[in-house]
Length: 68
Image (cartoon, rainbow, N blue to C red; front, side, top):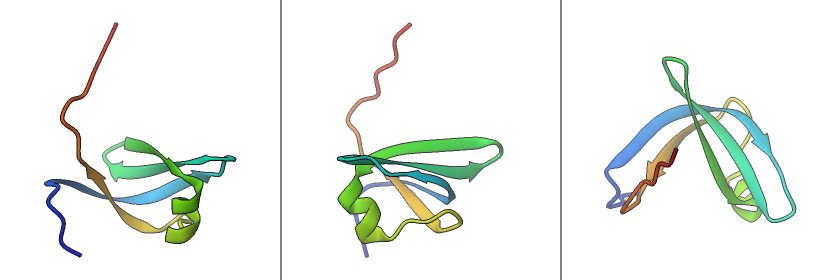
């Protein structure tokens, strides 16, 4: 599959939490770094995400907000 997003980070699923609407997927991207993504629970099931799966985190955003 080809996509336009350039921020693609390979990693391994380290946890999958299901919820009534959204699921939370934690991805180890190496060097002690973990990305956490909230996606629909339907998507978690359709992708059949499990701990240990090799995945690609695809980041497409026009802005990242940080506050303190």
